Image (cartoon, rainbow, N blue to C red; front, side, top):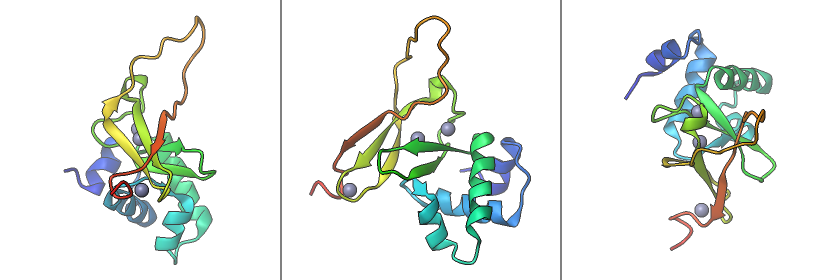
Length: 136
Ligand SMILES: [Zn+2]
Ligand SMILES: [Zn+2]
Ligand SMILES: [Zn+2]
């Protein structure tokens, strides 16, 4: 397991106090986090700083965002070698009951063949249903 310092270094992000705190929080969660989720935990940090941190992380591929249809963008750490390249595309799972969103890194998406001159920039690949906790 890489340390926060190592992850930031590999992804070429300068280490600052807020970045460390936000990344530590994201790493501690098994589900993807919305800005609101993070705000609720880091109550002493202002919203715009958290938002800027997330955008920096996203740009440097420390995290990726997921539109799961809940209306709130969620963020997940790029684990398991995800560099947000098309080959790293994986399915996401959204639980209709508890509204949690998970990265299914072990379920890669088949190469998406686009028509000529189309370029992929993002794919959410959200599967919806009940998570293992809600499906008891
Ligand atoms: Zn990623
Ligand atoms: Zn659930
Ligand atoms: Zn993901």
